[in-house]
Image 1 (cartoon, rainbow, N blue to C red):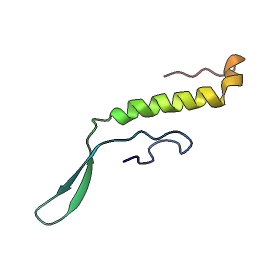
Image 2: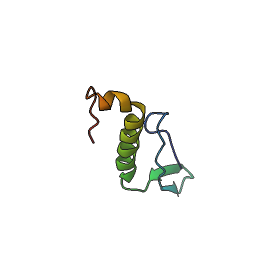
Image 3: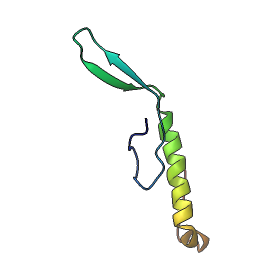
Image 4: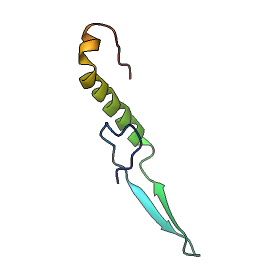
Length: 66
């Protein structure tokens, strides 16, 4: 699945999930990637900024840090 976790303009990182059912029939969805989506999201946001703000970066007005 690719839930919206960051800005909608940025490519969303996909994640693995576990679907669990308890003895009462309650359903729950749990993230199963250990949070690695966060690292991918940071990279995606940095790349987006680099593309969209290239002119300002070349002028030294903006710096993108990771």
